[in-house]
Amino acid sequence: MTFGCRLNAYESEVIRGEAAAAGLVDAAIVNTCAVTAEAERQARQAIRRLRRESPDRQIIVTGCAAQLHPDTYAEMPEVDRVLGNIEKLSRDSYGSKQGSPVNVANIMTVTETAGHLIEGFDGRTRAFLEIQQGCDHRCTFCIIPFARGPNRSVPVGRVVAEAQNLVAAGYLEIVLTGVDITAYGEDMPDRPGLAGLVRALLRDVPDLLRLRLSSLDPIEVDRDLRDVIVNESRLMPHLHLSLQSGDDLILKRMKRRHLRKDAIRLCDDLRRHRPDVVFGADLIVGFPTETDVMFENSLRLIEDCDLTYLHVFPYSARPGTPAARMPQVPKAVRKKRSARLRAAGETAMSTYLESRVGGTESVLIERCGEGRTEGYARVEVHGSDLQPGTVISVDITGVSSHRLVGRVVA
Image (cartoon, rainbow, N blue to C red):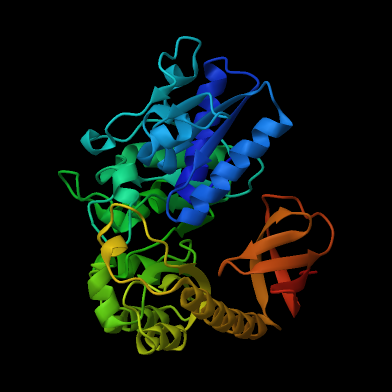
């Protein structure tokens, strides 16, 4: 059971393989997230439900929340074992001689990524591919660097080899994922950068039809990466930016490295040179000291950057972070502002979807006559021979329930 980010989804497939190789049977493994208090609450709720449903099944808890709070999960009567973020990727952790019920090492001392080659993703038509781990930045709201450790990159050759394996297994779309992917290669002697990795993948895996990038730090989109985004048509024109706020003072208090003008400038530049690009963004609402005026600056960022896909997070205080010690915004205010921002995001999404009606989109079919366009819009497709994992051309005829509607091109 996987909570949280795409990196967790990738690692769950590694866990599946390693646990099976160790001979583990009749067990539930919960791969947790710690980005918000709500994510941890959902994980604990799921653990209790698993125990009620299967009283005799072994329950193993791992992931970021387990790395940060191993004792909390070990004390839950439903939990049999707790594994850290490094230990969860080793088959030795799942064998009959696993040792202590709590196996969590100091992740801040780790200097390499675990080397795994996976061949598929259970029930998915697009593959996630880990290119780096950890983060060297210290945003004041974020606890994840302490759950994931320092930045460390997967060698280019190993990323290419895994991509080749995935394409050979039938995957036409791969999403590059990590904790801070725009920091890729900074720990390597030759510093290839994310742009260098993307070029190597598109060059050495010619049958890879669609390549996507997960969340990008806007200040780290350098000239080289910008040129790749603009010029490589197989790199999908959907970019998700880690913006967090549209107010400069809040950004400084978050210890982000960009300002509002940097985000706007980046979006304007990329859209000018690649008109089909569509932007998503993470935005935190109700960060400590955020006033109504500061919130309005974030709200206006939707229009100023022409954002389409919003991930809105009401601020969640993470114990041990500097922001948790700052003056807090009342929860009721956070909730109200979150609702306003989400409503504005839905309006922006509707506008984008309506703009696609009457055109033709390349769609990766996922399941049950549904798929995603290159711009990541969900599409309900009418027609025959809709095999999951295939890419087809679809004429867009309308919009329904926050998704496009279309028919296979005759």
